[in-house]
Image 1 (cartoon, rainbow, N blue to C red):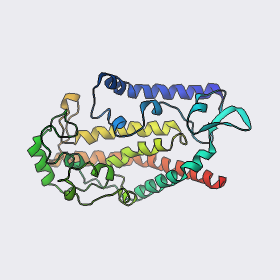
Image 2: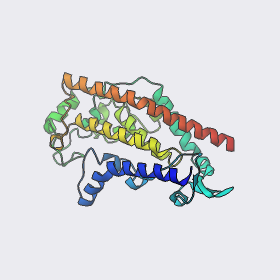
Image 3: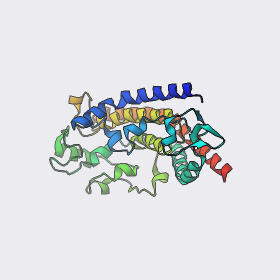
Image 4: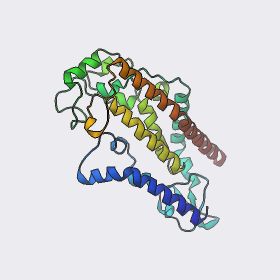
Length: 290
């Protein structure tokens, strides 16, 4: 890719990222937090500066003097010192991670979407807590502590996602229909799970710089939308931030949540398939180099 082309791609990507992280960076400087917009930067380990880096993906050589030469996973091509590309040896070092991500995503894609959890994972994270103890203590519980506990106790919780389950309170964990572990993740994840679908962003950035940044940013933007649904259906009252609650304790609220969950399951299907295809491509290159 010649210098004019890659500079154009890089500038477009950087502007897109700047547009979506500006609010987070401003709040960070001011010492404020937003339970929806800041979540992807506090829950996940990928910093805004890393999201801003544009990667063309494996197999693309950048002519000229791109900044990539100083980034992890890149090197100057030995046969052509005027170009920089992802170091093929980086695939060898990441092969086990690539294989694990591929297998997890394929297993998830093989299952039907379950849309009957109603977002109760967020409620289980504050079950039987005292005032001042909720994870997002700056925001009030819409039904209060007793009302929140009543919702948990009147429903069956069916959370299959380990990274949500691990935040359940001690009293809530026995109420879950399953007890997921990290080792069981490939056996339990399913495409209707909001947190599993947000995690497509995590799997994309964990494959950086081997996959195109456009794919990672697409996963990030979709995860932002999913997080909004996650918190609208949560026990927190975020109306002061402009988020109308989805009252999952009611029949209409359950129907609204399940419909939105189904829509996200459909929207993440092609994204998951593209990530699987990228993993397969990388693993083929690994096999060819072995």
